[in-house]
Amino acid sequence: MKANGAIVLVAKCPIPGKSKTRLTPLLGSDGAASLARAMLSDILVTLLSSFPENVLKVLLYAPGNEEGEAHMVDILKDLGLPYTTTTADDDDEEEEEDVYQRWILLPMVNDTSLQSSDLGGKLSNGLNRVRTLQSKLSSSSNENGDVVFLGMDSPELPLHEISHALQISSQKAHLCPANDGGYGMLCVPSHAPCPTIFEHVQWSTHLTAVSQLKALTDCGVEVSLGKLMFDIDEMEDVRGLAGRLCNVRNGVLDGDERMEDVRGLAGRLCNVRNGVLDGDERKEGGVLERCTPGAMASSSLKDGDGNMCLYTWDALMKLSIILKQEGENEDGQDRQFFILNDKAFASC
Image 1 (cartoon, rainbow, N blue to C red):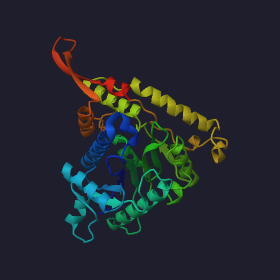
Image 2: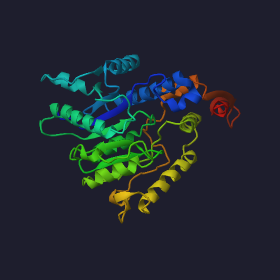
Image 3: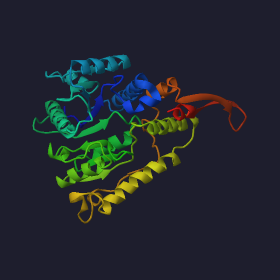
Image 4: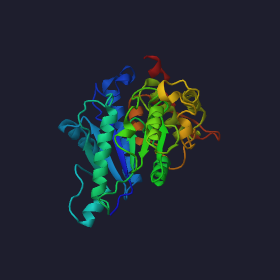
């Protein structure tokens, strides 16, 4: 059976004192780790249920040692999700199909952190290993599938973007930029050369997405741009996430609260066109003119998005970032609604 692509979730074990440390003033070290675990849980559950057939689900985890594996196994067991540390090597069709119904644990090599300057090398290594896994399940041993990379910092999954990326991946890559200048999703087509596509990317800067676009197009890989995603790294990111989730549950359409992030991204992209970057990015035309316009910086949540984030919601409630209140609707009927706990942010 041939796999129709793979989804690789790149994740760091949510350990107190090592996870989301910039959120410690707001949540404490245990609270920051619990939020990280909740966001990871939402992504693990949503992806497995949304792509049950013919798409491999790979958890590329750090640290890539026994401790890291044990930590991830504990999370998967707690969620009741099936997993395996290897793919089925025998020829039994039932075993082969079963691989698509579970998470495949894949350790990240030579790492202690996902923030290393060698992240490109780690992603390249992961891509090659996932392509090897795909070839074992492919009708042609020389045929590699397309691979979607996702991070654990964006629990509001754009499921329609992932599906779209896999549908167009035979022709082009697909990238969803993040509000901080990075990117939340990248679909790498099977013809993209590895490791070249990850070379010279400026990791952990406001130019990460732009430099990734340049690396891809320099290799002759066409790229389409998807919707804006939101990384949760800073206290204001938590405020924004909590506000969006409150709006969903309060029945408020998501919109204006995203526009400042959209404007910020648009400004950075304009800088690229105006030649603000150093080096080859200054060449006439700019990096973005190599890319296909898409739903970039969309301000609306579409049907099918993984925007309920049940585990993340529960964590934010337990951490008192979100408060429940009683009130009345327009018809005078009693109802519950949810608000941000502004005092939690004011005390930081």
